[in-house]
Image (cartoon, rainbow, N blue to C red; front, top):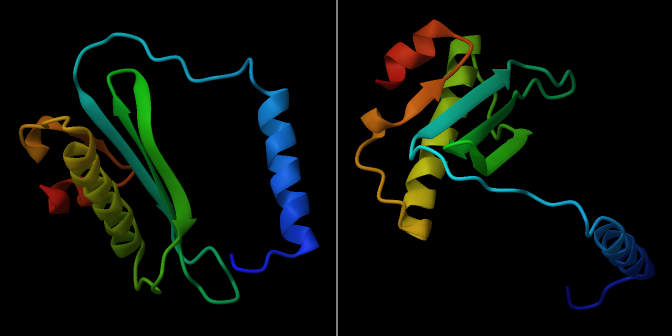
Length: 126
């Protein structure tokens, strides 16, 4: 930001105060089996104004979360299945990105456990 306003500085100050106040909290990583597990879900046409869906996912390496996301999809989906499939596709993309970024060396996507609340998305994604 080239010229931050007072509101930006207030937000930065609030974030820093939050971080200072929560120093004792943290994420604890434990040893576990090297299994990548992905949970994905979506809410079809949840926003009334533009009918775009909200999707999200969690990626675990053993018992430890390594990636997560929740956001509104960029396009309007025509069905619940399409919405769920887009969410699962975003999760798989995150797995590929994490594999390259962190050199996790996930052997193949078949070694990844994928979970979705719809059975047809699991069949389509395989």
